[in-house]
Image 1: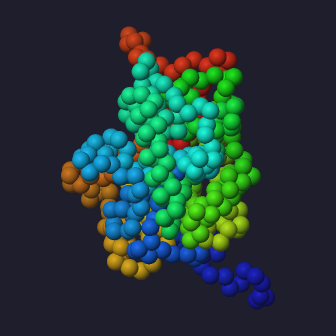
Image 2: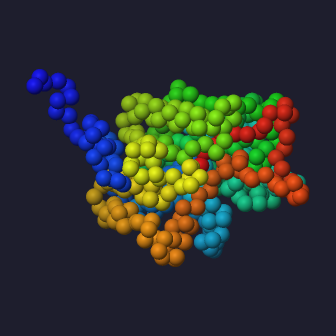
Image 3: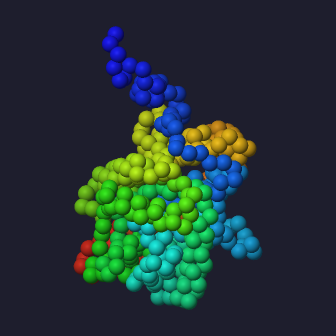
Length: 393
């Protein structure tokens, strides 16, 4: 038989060997990551809601998960959860887009001061436009917001300057931004605070070049303050809650995820020590011989998260006690066993709860016999356009 470039490739290069003949739950699309990290390396996370799972697994299983904005020691565990401490390395809430991440860096270092820097909700609540749901009930006054924001920015700077590994999960390409200065928000104004106006706000849907440019500038700025920083990019498998494009939400979801996946590919070719981890492919690819989505078609099951983290630990963690503990934890998890034990099932359910800003976009409408409160009724846009926004998980 004649020899050709496909004659003697490794198993991972052939669909039959790498996908078709793989046992359920064992799909592993990672070949060789450009780097690994050990037990002492400080790992920071940011991104969409799905990114909260990564931090949860690393922290729970002995890895050096970096938290630079902890709650006060006197605050109890339930209060910490309500106040959204520990979801990510700093208390920035969901960072859905590349533009949002880049502008967080610029805001934290004083290079960007948005013109629209405070929102109100209802009659009295003060809201941070860039963390609209981080403080349940809002702030009592603008002074309190500014004080908390400065503390937050200090934590963000600490994170960027001290981390060894930065795991960023990209979730969306759709966003709403200020016409005045181009600053993007995690939620459309008017949904969780602020006042939507077509005169002052506009919709943007980022393309591949936009995402690559944003992340190129971010990586350059990150390495300026932390030359040793290594970056792991991943794409959230969670579909959009809603789309502001005049088309089906499924089509918008595939567009957004495709843009983000292609952008990640280009970034890994541009930068050394920038890696891609295929959580999107494992969960949403449909090739893992299991359905890793819950009944709503959006939420990722704990079994799916365990599969993702099992592959992550195998390839990115150096052999050490922490990595072995994580591997044992993800191997030991079985949803059936958890369901048989009420306490175990409840523990899993608590761990799977995520803080997702964009879920506010699709709240069940109020019954006609109920009067909506000011907090439930978003401000009407001046142009008559619906103040919806694309959002994911």
